[in-house]
Length: 248
Image 1 (cartoon, rainbow, N blue to C red):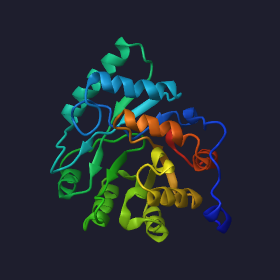
Image 2 (cartoon, rainbow, N blue to C red):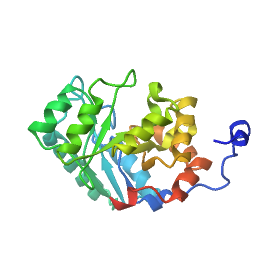
Image 3 (cartoon, rainbow, N blue to C red):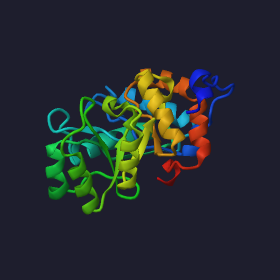
Image 4 (cartoon, one colour):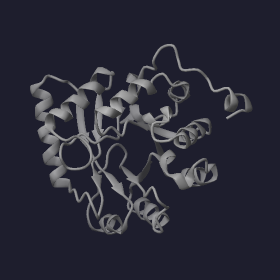
């Protein structure tokens, strides 16, 4: 961020960025009733219809898997996915939907890596998140174990972790270790916090973002999304050509 942009931030765009070029959203919570996302099948369809109308061809929905709270499994995620697929077909919404998971980095995840196949998408990508309070003691070990077992870790919304706000060295270290970074679309509006927005912009300026995700949980997120497509940094990221969403 330059001196000029710091004190004279760019105005919102006159026309929205066309996110259909992404083709795929790879972070969402559309399976009803299994985490803090969609509450009902009708709600799931409402959310997914919005992304179809935005020009997305595919969504990869990623329910939380957390040892202490959302104890989802491959089985109940697959069952929920089929219900959503069926309802989309009934309502004639021709969008592809697949599922993986958003794994919380805890000691339960460490056990899972060795014991059972993780839910992946694309090139054996595994979406992970960490605590918003502090970096987990086992993060480096989990990243190493994921990569040793053939997985490619993607860190969800790095801009939202308060202990890393503007920590460019930390993000560069993660990227150099082979971790891919996924930015939340709504972060660019300041929805989560002004600091998250600032960090998101720094990550874009540094060319460190490889995936753009909605992290959509509810209809309130859709209203913010409608603002995000007018953000100058959204255009900068889309125009950068570094995003991998369209390879999924």
